[in-house]
Image 1 (spheres, rainbow, N blue to C red):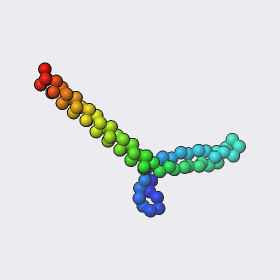
Image 2 (cartoon, rainbow, N blue to C red; image 1 turned 90 degrees about the vertical axis):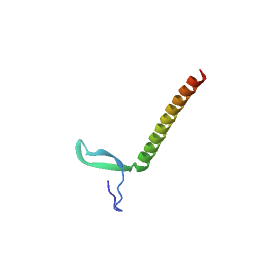
Image 3 (cartoon, helix red, strand yellow; image 1 turned 60 degrees about the horizontal axis):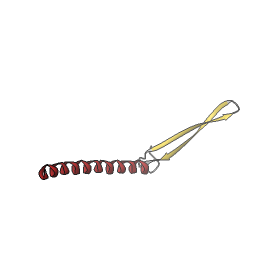
Image 4 (cartoon, helix red, strand yellow; image 1 turned 135 degrees about the vertical axis):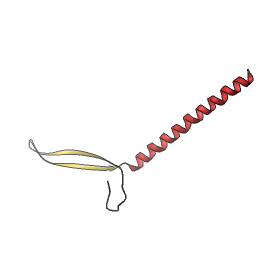
Length: 70
């Protein structure tokens, strides 16, 4: 979505029908800017990947050290 200022943002939207009696006469659409939430999820994913890489490196070094000691 691109607001008036021209900077694109990532949005989540929900649409709800508006009824008059049993007839749908319109809808209400709400938009929520989720750019910050998306950026936070990307940051958490990067940290998780770095943790997995560090764990793998620690395991490799531990295995080598064990072979040297044995």
